Length: 178
Image 1: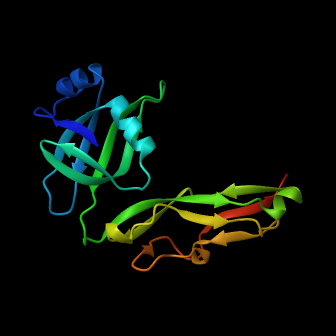
Image 2: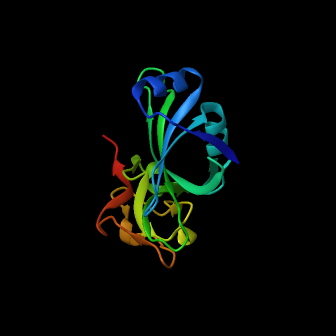
C-alpha cells in the first residue's frame, strides 16, 4: 500500500522543499470530505500506479486509508518528471464521474486496405458508483474497413454505468491514407 504524509504548510516554499527531497505533491478530495494536502515519494507512487490492476487503489495518509482514483496529473514540460497529482476518493455507494481508458484490440481490415487506424478518444467520461466502475472499455476493431468507425453507442456498458459523451462521437475508426 502506498503511504504518504500530510503537508502542514501548503505554501510555495514548503512544496518546493518537499519536491527537492523527492516528494510528489498531491491533493486528495471527495464529495462531502475535507481536502487532504498530501505528499508521496515520487518513485513509490510511480511503482504503485504501475502495479495496480484496476483504476481504484489504496493510499494511507495521516493514519487513514483511502481508496482513490487518479483524476489528473502535471508533468514537467522539459524533463517529463511527475510534479503534481490529484486523487479523488472513491466512496462506496456515491455516484461520481470518472475517466475510463479505452483499449483497442484486433487488427482492422481497413489497415490492410491502405487505411489508417485513428483512435480519437483514449478515455471516456462515465458516471457511476465505484463498485460498478469498469477498469477499461475494450473495443474490437477487427471488422472495421476504410471509412468505418466505432461510436460511443457501440460500446457495451456495464449495468449502473452511464457514458457522459454524446452517442454520435467516434471513439476509433479507419480513415483512408493520404
